[in-house]
Image (tube, rainbow, N blue to C red; front, side):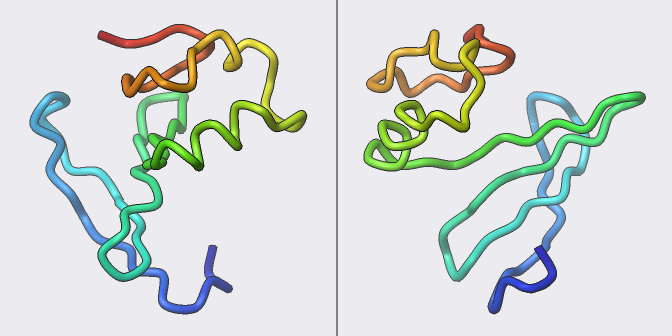
Length: 83
């Protein structure tokens, strides 16, 4: 990530988790938020509809994540949606 020109790392307060998390953006567009947990590192990607459809159609994405419908705006995690 250090080679992406203009990438900004900032701390963002997550109201739901009640903790600070690193967030990465280019300009005003948030790319992803990292969630550093005991024994786990997770990330939440910020995608518009076109990016989501493209990603879900990618062969590089694991098959379990393809369980989410591309028009669903809720995040997916391990092939299941978090409510």
